[in-house]
Image 1 (spheres, rainbow, N blue to C red):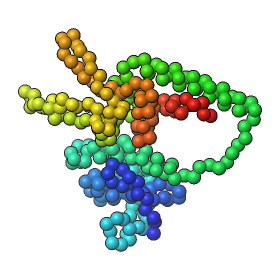
Image 2: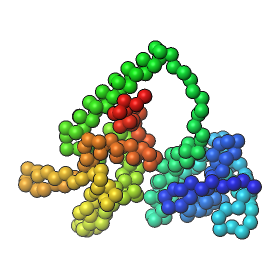
Image 3: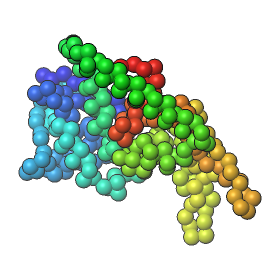
Image 4: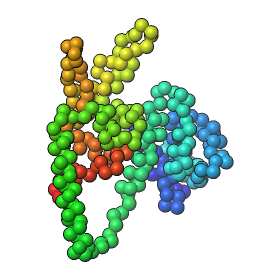
Amino acid sequence: MSDLIHIPFHGGDVLATTVDDKPYILLRPVVERLGLSYAAQTVKLKGKSWACVAEIETQVPGDVQKRRHKVVDVRTLLMLLAGISENKVAESVRPLLIAYQADVADAIEAYFASKRPPSSEVVPLSGIEYAKRLLDAEIRAEAGQQFKRAIEAGDGLSLRSFHKKYFSAVKEHHFFDHLYRRGYLINQLGKGSRRDDGSYRDGSQHRHPGHLGKPWIYLHTTVDRTGARRDNSRVRPGDVELSFRDRLAKEGLVANEHSTGLHAIEGGAL
């Protein structure tokens, strides 16, 4: 009987196990949480050259006995999820489908990475190598200070600019969905007044800072040429911008290469 691993994910758990030291995911709980037919999804996997499917015997929460369950590796799960259209699921679970498609692999990787024991191997450095690393650290520290000074000189980035600067590998709608789900932004999409064509405007507070987002995001007010006041959400500049970037990266958003870690080198640590 395989022991199950519970990985917290958007108000529920991804049930996982290991096969040959690789993470495998129980397929049925994922499919049924999305309101889809388990039988139909397993049929999709038959005959697929990329599908990596195994069976284990285990007892899932809520069941009264052990049963055989299909498990798939992370790549197979992502391939299956990628083929599910948002229009094929109930509107109430579309945000969850998007979260699975965008974030579940990162959540699984982060969980298993946190369980790996740290390496105990210590490799001594030669004097030349130590000097090279010291110089490199000093250069990186100075670059970090210059980077911070450039940030602090402005009013802060718009959220779109912040996304392009630090998370351009993440699709924009996935980026904003993450901010809505986490409570950083208020989501009032289509919650405003009705237009003449029957559609609805966004609510007056759409994309304003949410309760959890206010430490990082603020409303920047400008006045246009007609004298109308415009409020737009911006990321607070300086250390706050960098800490927000690092926080989102820890939550699973894939940061641009070389855009993280500037915070850590301020103290000159090697």
